[in-house]
Image (tube, rainbow, N blue to C red; front, top):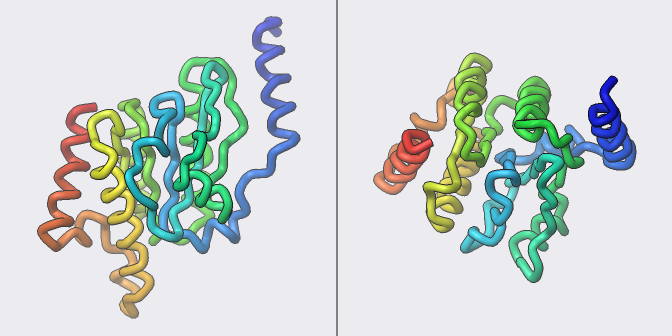
Length: 206
């Protein structure tokens, strides 16, 4: 084994040994799981103009060349961290797209374990995640890939909150068939149509 690869793996093993992944039972109580690629958007919290809906869980990923640090004096980050709705994944290796593969792996794992009405959103400018969205359609998981570079902070916040709202609508509906309704079909008001259009533009610009 090459020395560089050996060091890479040993670094990962040390990180994995001291960090526990989020509890699945706790994640089942969430209304929205958001995977953030800090390699692409390290200032995620700094761009949010307001709080995210209750039940939104932020799972941050970073590659070995990224050294993400919690934002100073950020009320949104401090609140999410305090209530246990933020998790910083152990730093991935320095290999190309290491964080992307980690996101795909854990998103797929959660897809098998969590109720299907909980939507997944991935914030990243990497086009490869569009295939992950296609795969989630096959498992009936509502999923969105948003490019944060093409959305203003207020629109991003509104989109994330709108997506989590659809989970609450599903939970309050006694018709089991309604629980499998896609996110797109839930957007029926004028405001929601505008949000869906923003998602479409974000994807087209990737």
